[in-house]
Length: 620
Image (cartoon, rainbow, N blue to C red; front, side, top):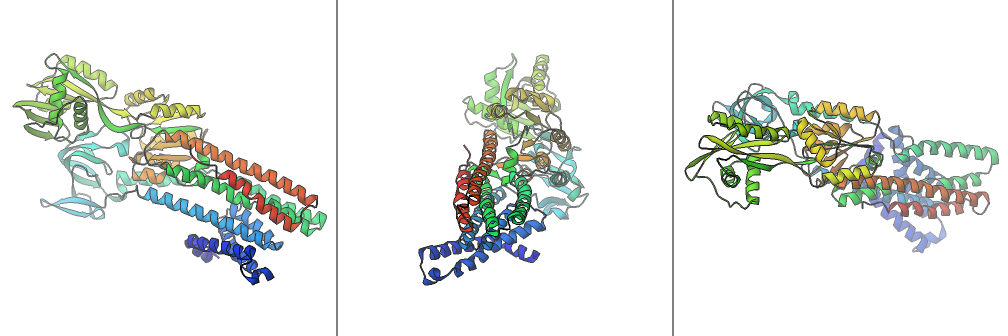
């Protein structure tokens, strides 16, 4: 039986296509009297009744093997069994057609979802550049050994953990720590796997490889967290538990009391939940398809149902609430220069640098109308800044370490002013000429434009808490949170710390986590619902989350929560419709207005009411 279930699962989609087409043809032959055989007997319907019910029974057995006793397949099996017992062949064929069509729709939706997600995923580095006897050769990552010297250039991810033995670089570690500003690293600094060289080039002596690296440890953390994911139960599963027992016990008692098998068959045919078995999944599939058209990928109806019950929404900061890109917020000039001069010369000096802060200065200058001009000479000092010559005058633009290296003097007023901006969490790039610092550029990570409105909408929906968890420093975190209206802030967190905070929230609330980095992946996995920012998000975050926002549109979060609540309500309405139609059908049965054939016909007609209700589910 297990082997049969395996082969059916493998070829289910193609079998369901063939089955659906066959059932439509059979029903057309039978009702349109296309062949004389259809007029003489029901053999063709009997044949396809058993053919059509086979996939449902196989699926039901599969559920039993998984110990999912109250699955919708079990409920559908009841409807089919009693249709066969009562020899209502056409009703059984119609039920099989509805169920196979629903499976086809579900398979199409899941296939499209998986395809969209897979297009975002990229493999971790498979190769590394290793220096051997002064020569650099590319080898498979699995062949790198402890003690090897690995060379990593601008735009490349560090593949191993080790110590920098040569060079300087600006390293973006936001994927691991959540820190928005690239860190300047040089000789004797530690290099972590999974971090990106934004600018510069370094040589690293390998200390850790394979499963011992930082990246692999975080992946292991994700796997552990996935096993710990809170268990939720769908409305259909809860209903199924009681329904199966009620149908069996009720049928047995009715037979014992009345000894009237036709009456029992009529009752069971009226109340069999084949319509619910199709309508509930259809509602969620309809909602998932509607969301996909808006660039929101939902990995299953169960996750959408859980999202509708969410009470707390937790956000990572960098790349989620903020853009993850630096933007110049202020330009300060002493009396020895002017703001206009700093902008003009700073833009020119930054033209050949790839550092995020230099790019921010260029963008700022262009916004102010500066033309595309380049310095006469430019010397990039990895991880520190640039030394340029513009029309014969030396301009130094960079961090404090570069100023000290060049023995450039600071005005006291500069340091006092810098302190004000650093307390806000801004990054500083000093501007010096003639051996003296005459000003600086202050830059900060920018908040996404829809973040503040999104937080308002979440509170308007009745969300009890909106929380920020971040690896950034407390000054930056509180500044961002205040601007967008978040009151609950937790800063300076490692990935393990985020998990601990989430575990605390899980004790009292249903929690959704929104993030984008590798450091968010475990948190996304352990949450009741994980939402990944797809376009900028890391592969592991997208894989661990249950919902992916393809366009990084924060305003979509309140929309999908509203969608989830709407489809949950529609599902409850489906049960209500089912209950009302069943009550009326039972009245007809016990009043002797209909028998088994009439009950089967009534069951088929009433099936369409919850189905029509379910197709209303869509994102607004």
